[in-house]
Image (cartoon, rainbow, N blue to C red; front, side):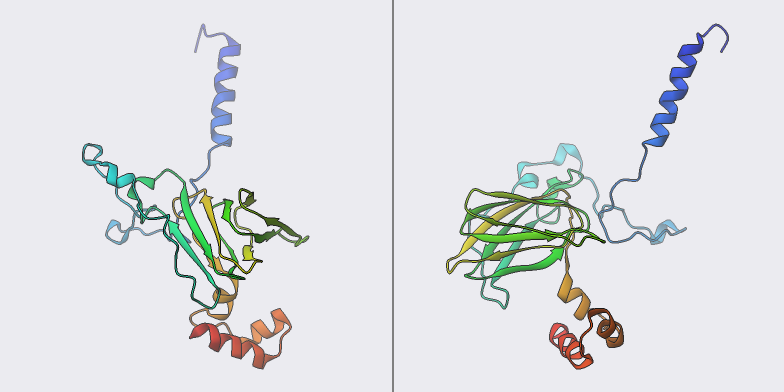
Length: 222
């Protein structure tokens, strides 16, 4: 590198160091990805092929009918319509998705988390009591009562919920920061695991009577 000023070399090395230091793996769009040596056993990480750009049409970016109220006649009194890359193919690689949330009177979107996305929610109708729990060691509950036009944000990976506190229907929309945010329902995943978690584990962890744990496991397994 004869004849090149020292400061140019220094800047080049600094730029290289910064690029290496700031490099990171892309955010995963599935729960795990086990490495395989054979390509015949491989799957594509984001689960989708890319369409020839010359064959793309408006329908690849379109979904119709999100204005229609959903059925909330269930035990929770709620219904979540999630639009991911599986519903709108044009979302692939864009890192966003959308959900409509319908609530019957006193309906609840049970405590859950999205392992791959933060969420921003806006209430269109009704009044919702919402919140999320911070991580250990604080485990702090952060809540707010929202009315039509109010907005609330749920950080990625945090347990959160929405509850309709009125005797009227409620509707909200949520944007999520992933084309495939994933969802883990806390009660269902713990007590409805397949195969079931050893009830002794849950009895110890939740400080419950073993009969209660086994009853919950039967309930969520059905």
